[in-house]
Length: 139
Length: 301
Image (cartoon, rainbow over all chains, first blue to last red):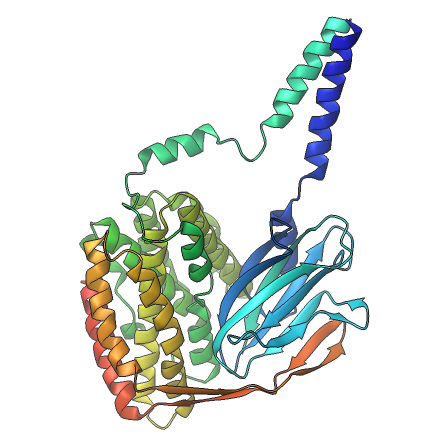
């Protein structure tokens, strides 16, 4: 009987831990949308969850003359070690949100060149490897 | 007592196991209704999804037109009354995109009376494709009654369309997403061409027409994945290849220079030191307009 109780308690504990450990990147990305600065129109929300790769990457065609904003939301502010880097279509680095050891939660990019840009999220000392992000634009 | 603990424990474990991965009855029912799955693209859905999510929102073009002082013109748009013509899933998906662009245009110009008509047509097309549940027409209709709600209106409509695209991709119906985005892009191209031709001295608008070359290439790539499995998409690709012939004359040059930045109120503001030029003549714009209008007429008729 003791064994049965132990098994039941183990199942409860494990399933609870699983729930706690789940990454709710969707709610974090939704949290990011109203944090876009005034004047920016929402375009996309991105989930940031560590998978098989060391990074999470999305792409979007940015347009010359348009300013874009990308922000990061995570359980532990400001970004829980999540860094967003922006690369142009030739994979030249345009921006990175980690500067002098400081994690910046939002970058604004006034685009001079229309093309595909790669929005890459990496983890630098992250604890949860979980976050969300939103992309907005204004003219 | 011990037995009660075990029973409660097992029930709790089973309950917590019913997470997001388990489909609700509603989902199962909706999936059962769906008979519009593609035969299959020639590449993985993941790759298609990656390309789909980079296609820019047509809203960006509407904002450009409004910000550059161009007046609202409903004659550029597809009539919401044309909906009765769209009986196949192919036409429904394409025109869902067309109407999505038109709705964004009416919203940006705060033409709510026109917007309401497009909402009705969008809802009907979405219902016809079994994705109407993602279009919150009640909330959108309520927000549209007051111009102070513009930001919320744009947010909700963008979120609804993003949800539709996401859902279609998770259901292996990316073919409909491709058509939806193609229709939306064609409509935006048609509108910006009309305005550019009407304002021949406006170089910025001509450049915007030229910049569409990048999106055209991605749309063609997406359609090419279905050309062997879907005759309608293959025919659309042939039409769009005509557009590509004109766009081949448009030259885009790019000079990379490392960017700089400053931190302003906690935001990293990048200074883009790279530059680009777009070589496009007014003749090219006229030719692009002519072919784009011809393709669009096929789509909306």
